[in-house]
View: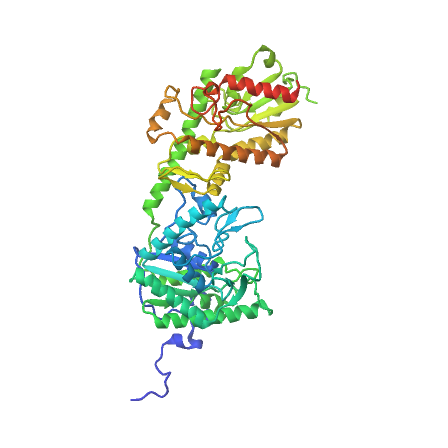
Length: 359
Length: 238
């Protein structure tokens, strides 16, 4: 017996008026099909724009095995390590706003690309890495230190790539700045947080759908060549552009950028197995939320918005709810901090005994 | 003008933690008549000698013309006198050389961690500035020893930790220099003077000559204290 029309029998989620979030926004869950689950022992690597920092933070606190491969020395107190961006993402790559940046990070980490711009000097005469210019508070003390730290960083990136089970990547921007000499893409325009902007060397670049799809596909292929079992979750950041380099309103550039990224994400996920689109963008921006997931500046995503996104992620992808892990690393930190406590105690004994003998 | 008859009217007050001991031990009858030396640990806690905080009552007890302070001063030793369970080294603005087979920590991390460890000493210095209107000078911590003598007098608990080994001199010296730089910057921010180490007390590499070392691995002796007193008297012209 044929249907009266093609929509007959389709699930509720395909119909706007059946959405329970119209009256109960907190129940909005647009996930309908996922291609894999994330187990407690699956190593999850995160990267992407600033919204991805929220994802990383939530994952690390909710029982997922959030992979961290670049650690501060255990003698450094954890709160100071965090100030220097250890554990913000899996490795200290900072925000990766564009697909091309991700592709080039992989190339740099494996030695396939060595950009012309290697070190930038700040006006305070500290050294910054052009590809993660805000990773080190105050900058690096010398070019040698920066290069040493970069080697450590690249090793951490390689370890992350080769050991991860799941890669969660958040596409953030289409607008970027390029070195016209070698194609290197910077997260911040030269001159903003180091370096000197010269029109002869640097140019504005606004990526198009085809370029983003090609760059993402290249990254997925690159990763799977080294880690065939890697699975992917692709998201689009709901955070509007802070500024546009195009002579038009920043919100018009925002809608263009997000539309391009959303289309690219769709194409990438359609073309690859075990590669899911996760609709964090939709959860934050949907009319069901009625704008309440944006902060007072109408740009930052609120804690409740992040919680909504990540509770959906946990519900859909998590096979468990459990405590924090990274036990081996925590033990190193505990041992080193215990050493410091012991030394403080010893010093006070030492100082005290010194007083006894000299007075 | 403070009028309490119990107040000390000696013109110079030297105040701090354990590094004041070398200076106290170097006082003679003449200098004792013009210099008060206060070690916070015993002054405010004579029984346990564990106090580290400058209490405001100090302003009711002294009325000096010049204050020289040496709060803290062992934070770099806490961090690196003995090897950490995972050995480390770091580069500085002036030194990019590191010891082999160690984790390298960036200078920014070392500096921030040391700064945090020095917060107590910094707070005491700030309090001192708020409590007194006279000139205040910070006394630089004595330089590190090149070698920790085998006959050093060490508390038993300390000796038990020696299995980790003493850190190489180069690392201890970089930690000391970082410590001193942080102290210098604090002094500049508080608009107080910084008294550098006495001339002629270090070898060509910046390590304290052994004749100025005390029997423990972190403090200078009374001979060094004498030189600091001489510096102070020259500055104050008392």
